[in-house]
Length: 101
Image (cartoon, rainbow, N blue to C red; front, side, top):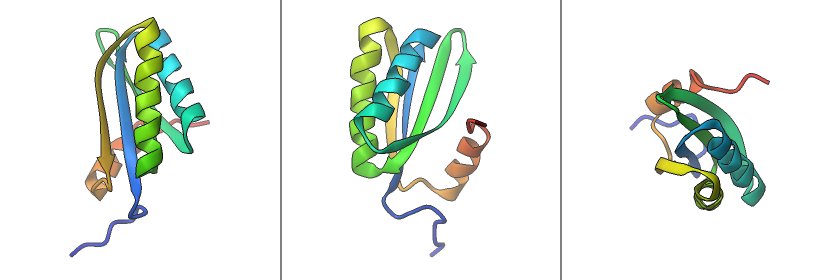
């Protein structure tokens, strides 16, 4: 069986919203609520914007829940997800949308 290059307990968390204000609110709440790293975003289309965080599975779940609550107050959530132990091929997709500070 292939060994994954990411930590065994790593996870990716996603929130997709309508509009910049709500995705910024989600990202801010996610980073404040748990020990996660903001790793990327994508302006999907027609006003949909996704934000991605990475960290321990529990921290990512907490962060996504906080992001949903915050973004829902100022806008509309389109979709959310947490992927525990993502396959390396999923990591390749995320790598294309990394934030370059």
